[in-house]
Length: 99
Image (tube, rainbow, N blue to C red; front, side):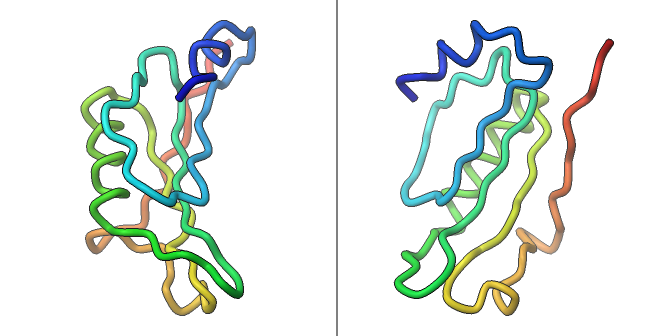
């Protein structure tokens, strides 16, 4: 997360991380100052697999830090078949907008 401090310094109203395609675990993300996290797997021919524990870990980090979590897709060659359910739930959390 080498550029994460730069993102936090911007004047953007919503600071978010798009962690896709997620190709490995991302433990200990510093989420202070982040408004939203989006996670998704790689799709299309040659798509590399994404492990559920990688996604769960990021979701748990978001919950611990009160950061909305959006799970976009599992990915794969047939992404409509693999869907976007994680632990029996669709995660569609959105950032809170402030004036």
